[in-house]
Image (cartoon, rainbow, N blue to C red; front, side):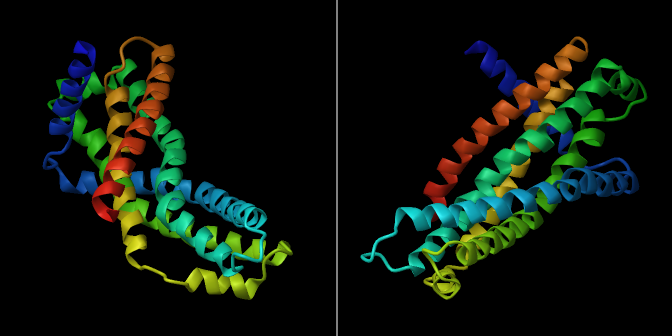
Length: 247
């Protein structure tokens, strides 16, 4: 319990140092663009590939499980859309990104810590937390809505592709289900959740990387701990935000 409270205190103090007005805005924006490309754009391909296949699998599995004349065929498209919009493209996709992006941030900052680059910044009077962490947090939070929208679009494309492959449903009924009782708020709901998740992933990974002590082995441990803790906090935030925004 004491260790958990100590870690929470360290995290809050680090975020207080990191989320501050940059000393040089030109350097901040250069770093921000670099982080957007490295953390966001480089993650686009994995988001698209996973979303297409998961959208296809969701549609096929729903089709197999409701293969009965008592349930209309358009329910397949409707259910696929709801799963993708409400949970997959935000929560599940961010859990996947926690593994890719979170480990990247933790290992990068952790390597800088053990090679004493962060100590050198402190000697020069640079706010290393602000310089290293804030561009990563802001960059991921800015680009995560793009990843979510791409995930939604490609996931639904995968479901439509499944309607041409599966004999239990037709493309016309699937497309009707996609439009049936569509609630635009669900898109904004997923985007809002993903922005919160982006902060969780980047800040927790930065905390574990920034506080690495030891050598290269400890950097690996920090990356693992960052992914595990980020995943737990994403699931906790998902429960809280779903209750606050949908009930």
